[in-house]
Image 1 (cartoon, rainbow, N blue to C red):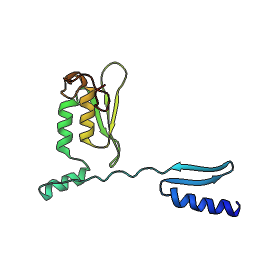
Image 2: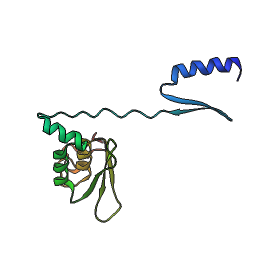
Image 3: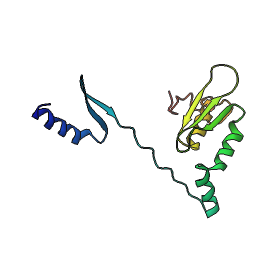
Image 4: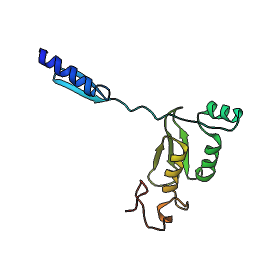
Length: 137
């Protein structure tokens, strides 16, 4: 590494080192995007026992019960690891459908879009079909 390379690399690391892991390889230099931090999980509750339950499980058990009531017949729903994603896998014949979401509210929205007979399903949209983001096509 020449003096100019060292100075250029120092400037590059100063400008982009927070977002990228920059390393020297035998072929040259490599930049690998650093993983984005997870957004903070915030719980609110009216009482200490309610907050205790939220903290103990890492999710709102009442929201999960509501979600299971609506979708458990058609979907297997699990929390992969505490602090990671929720996953729903469709039951029944045909190709398996998989939905992942960071929280129960997002999972419920995704399940509603994928489950016929719910008000969130695209077929129930009075304005016409919607793409996966909910925007009209």
